[in-house]
Picture (tube, helix red, strand yellow):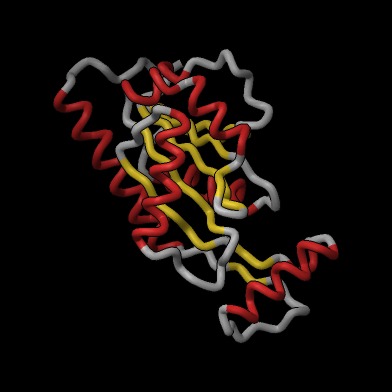
Length: 190
């Protein structure tokens, strides 16, 4: 089965997660292309894939504009094949509660007219040493507000590998179920 993992990233965390998801999908037998949504040709046909994962970061309560535009452009294809949305929260000091994550994802779906079969939100990172001055100040304030005990001089990675593996396993299970319900829909290998 062929799967596209398309990502939009600002600090590189979504790219890192997309690569990790791609590696896990390959371990499970999929042929995977990890594509940067910002430079991916807009005429790319997503119908060539058996499944598509789209990842984006959430900054100031919103997903990245170019990923919203990409999903809206391809919403017909995305709604016809198994597809999933994964988001990375800018606030890695806490998990989004389910209601808050649903609000972000519902807003995304309303803007794009895409209804992913699965959605997941992951915690990001605090790459203090890679932020500019203003973003570092905002990050420190956010961390203090959440009462997180961290050292402001170090980078922190919050990716939950167990949740990511569960997301991949659930998506593979859905793809396999989709193929058994619609025999002959799997695309031929190149």
